[in-house]
Length: 87
Image 1 (cartoon, rainbow, N blue to C red):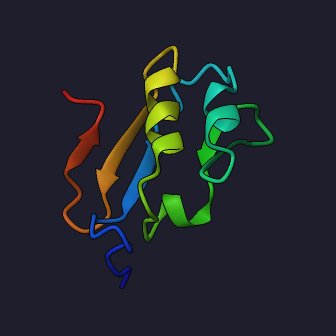
Image 2: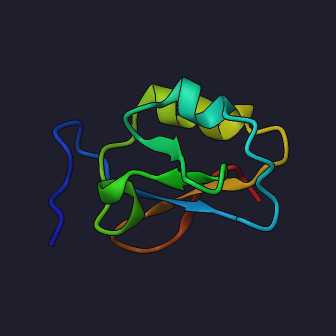
């Protein structure tokens, strides 16, 4: 099980709506440690952000905000609730 981060916040999981993603690359440029473009040119979270969760960083928050088609969402790795963007 993933532990709480050093900042005391729950780790986050990144979800990519692959039907919305256009592969602009803004997310991968903003948060290269969290997101990358896959072989198909679409965004995908790096391993720990895809499953168990990892620390929420400012760069990751910005990457979600920068997505031109709002294809990225952040969820709590523990509770599954949506963190960003706000619904």
